[in-house]
Image 1 (cartoon, rainbow, N blue to C red):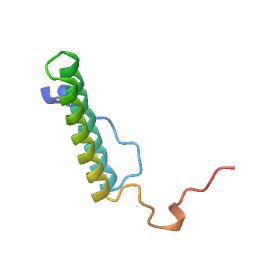
Image 2: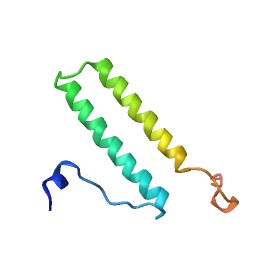
Image 3: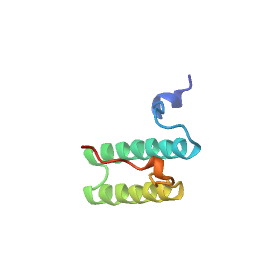
Image 4: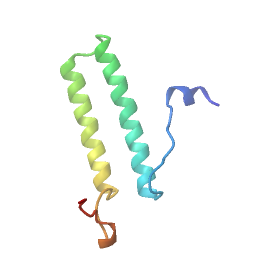
Length: 86
């Protein structure tokens, strides 16, 4: 194990295995790690709450853009549509 494995821990992927889903999962874990760092910096008084809010907002926009580029969550066939419960 490398020291970076302790700093940048990654969780296993349990979803539907496709290259797009794996890429989005990596992006999501990276987003989570960066938000955690920003929150710790803000809590420790190293950055202002407004700066933390702006940084997290920018990271969120990047994640949304990655989701759109990877076409995650788009229904491509009728068999994949969710049926209403009831």
